[in-house]
Image (tube, rainbow, N blue to C red):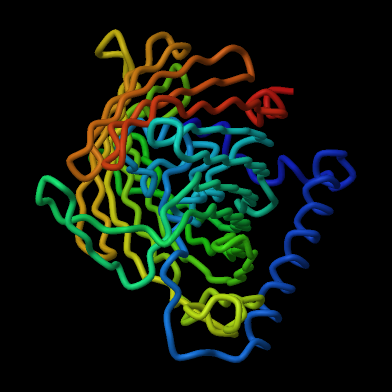
Length: 382
């Protein structure tokens, strides 16, 4: 973590084109979120739960994080970090744009992630994420009737087939507070302790077409998170922390809101009465990571572990090795599922790739491309 990068007031010029773009874009996103909240509160509730709404905000985002076993709750310096932990935008050092596409489960489904991040005044940051998802053709079941095949095996007979489309919009803001750790000796440097807290507002839109009819669902929710970064060693020549410990926690979908299917019709599809609702599933993410950029080894490296508690407790771990700060190799395990990946850096541009042995089927390709528009370190040197 570069201490030069954390100078207050670097982006005090609010007339910059990039700042005006993010301000206008943020206002638009807030209006969309407000619309989703109003719609969700107006529609009356039904007593049943929908069965085909997927947890789109549980899919991984960020090829670099997906390749490290989904340990994003403690990886705050990535393009999609705010998706995993709302406190991550507090550590943003530059304006960043990224676009990601994933071909999931042997070409069955497609997933995307588009991000825009910006540092703000007073050690604050803002991240905007848009994540579309297409499920592919899925089998539709009613009450799961069984039939016996010729070889005596019991199978389920689908009622038909349908497609499911999801859209998720996330707006995250966070603020960071810096402290100094006690000196270990009179000649030792004061090492930094940075604590950030943040919150995310999320808007959901879903559409599916069982029986050739289209049904739309809307919903909203929120996440909160905290991250602590502790400097363990300092490189005087490079003027940066060379060893760092990071601890993170995030609570996801904390509001008692629901997905509301506002266009469902009982006469058309008897299993989706009007005003059909599905509650969100509350989740907890915790993690810890250690980064070493001391130069004692010929490579820089980061190792991270996390725990996710939702339907059940799952364990995740990953490692990243950086060679001359240009080529990166990653590997991890996400709930016993192996993940692999790599990345390259060229000037302000970055490209990341992830390969995952997902439980449904192998996901061959998740690719992220992005650019850092303004680097704060360069601006500070001026």
